[in-house]
Image (cartoon, one colour):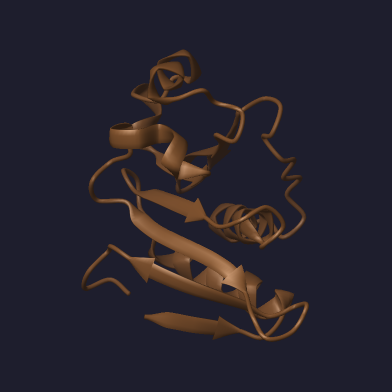
Length: 143
């Protein structure tokens, strides 16, 4: 089911709604081509989940995983773009971090290691430069 997000503010508001529903043990898988807004979503999600609108949210492109300890639990923000495949996940603490929330950019690189109950969000470009379309599957009954 596609949902239209007319601008960056709408993308951020959508991320905030997902953050309000997220709970420990959840995985949110963010797919879409480069520059489509995965990092915008992740930054808004993390700030909302932590309850800190000024939270510094650097991209984990080079560190591969960035950890956030919040009052609601730990969030692991993964960027798997540079990961060679599922075997490399263990070096990042993948299994140990599944008790918290995992926010995963480029989830296809995780292969079968991505938890089955993950919320899959696919972002794509919309009708204007700022517009996005998000499609999702998972979290039946929560969304």
